[in-house]
Image 1 (tube, rainbow, N blue to C red):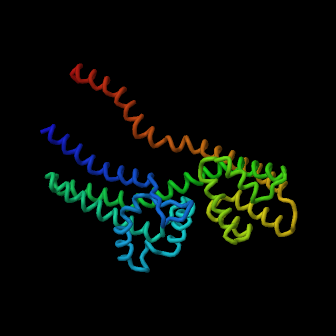
Image 2 (image 1 turned 30 degrees about the vertical axis):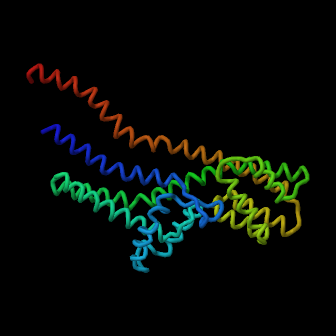
Image 3 (image 1 turned 45 degrees about the horizontal axis):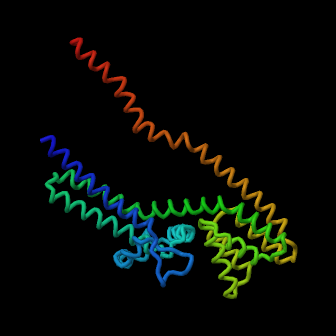
Length: 296
């Protein structure tokens, strides 16, 4: 009997965990194609299930909460920061699709396994909630991760571009020099997109402002404003870039301080969930056996 219960629990755990591990893997494997603009990426999950998600998105009422203007704007900013070339409505369709498909598949699978109706309904509801929140949580995670990578890379890039300009290169040539070094990370992708925009006819100011809209950091927005002002008045922007690089380094240092200050509060949950029960078991079990052996 106990073996059957353990086997059922293992199968239930696998049914809940495996689909979302697969979805997480597909999200981390970007799929590129000829229809995707250079410098952007579409997660493979959206590429392979885009038709399904689009079908669900098309069934949403225009005035639904998932398609509300403020929510669409927020998701649109996160998509721009994460460099995902998809529409906010597709994220809403992914929420609805993963929730209904995950919950329905879980419910049918547990009934086929002979799990009691109450447990099957509860676990199907859990799978539905996981499918509902997974797309937005993963998008927010990837956007935050990419933004942190941009913040870490910006000071060095600004210093290097400024040094190249002090050596006699103009602004665009200095950026091309930075790109020729072959630095990894998302920042060269953003600078390359900016250079391509200028080559296609956009002004340097417009390309910088669009890059600031994609990067979405206060320090880089201030840098773009300072460079724009220098270009408009005809002043040298080399010293401005030097000061802005120092400001970006301070922001990166403050970000590290904030993350270090958050560490104790973040550790409370795993400590209470994993360490405290182990401590109670280590302390309480010997006392329990002593009480049992003494016949009390």
